[in-house]
Amino acid sequence: MKKLLAAASMALMTMTGTAFADGHANFPERPIMMMVSYGAGGATDFQARIVTMTAGNEDALGMPIAIINKPGAGGRVGWNWFATQAEADGYTLGAYNIPHFIAQSIEGGVEYSAESFEPIANWGADPAVFVVGADSAFNSMEDVVTYAKENPGGLTFSGAGLFVGHHIAALQLEKAAGVKLAYIPNNKGGAGAMKAVIAGEVLGGVNNLSDAFRAQEAGNVKILGVFDLERNEFLPDVPTMAEQGFDIDNASVNFRGVMVPKGTPQPIIDKLAATVPAMFENSRVAGKMKAGGSPMHIMTRDEVLEMWAAREETLKELLADL
Image (cartoon, rainbow, N blue to C red; front, top):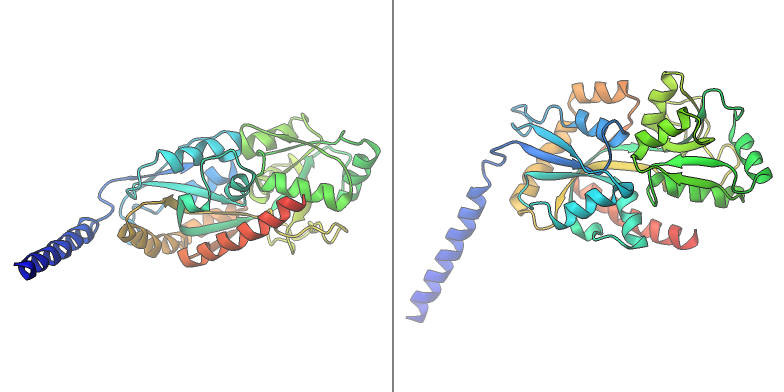
């Protein structure tokens, strides 16, 4: 009798596992939503709409991806919602920004960490840059730092929020230059921060290269420096901070990609991880990203897992030091 019960139990487990796998074999069967923690018009929103534009193709997911914006508090509003309320069924994706959500979780006061999410794939790496209005008297980072030294706390500049890449870049600049700056986080994200620079509400700003590239092309801003290890192909004439004498690395570079909530069934994670990177590689996607001044950096799920872990270690040391 015991042998019969054991055999029946094993058969039931096998059937359940098969049914579970078969239940996700046709995923996705309806349109998918992707949450962006920043407002419409900013770099993350702009890029998310481009990289998901071919999702409905038969050689991709075969279903469209709709973007929903949940901005606020430098991304905290959206990621808190994603970690605590989003359905873990594969039909609710989230856009991630690194170092943003990891730095915020290290600082505390949020309901998420890297353990709250499962990465799928990375689409871009967007360095921070320092921008000023097109008619600004500042023409180099030396000009900016000289003003900051002569006017302690008087150099006002905008960014997308607290403990996002922009803020980390600002903290690094303060330390490297030995100055005190007046960083003003904008509750409308990168787009709002850029508008503040263009409108003359602040003397300068730290923003994404992609946002700044479009603003410079329109003649609205000047880009004075790049917070990265080397010059960017979109801005070959703009020197890095290190080239201008400031010991600043690439800790603030904004990696962007797709994730799902922890608890999403593994077969769905595997299907997305196998499909999404190829979706990013689509030639139409690459062309529109390049036209928008948006640097691409495609990474697989395994590569993103390694990047998240490495960035978390770096940020713990960096934030403790700053």
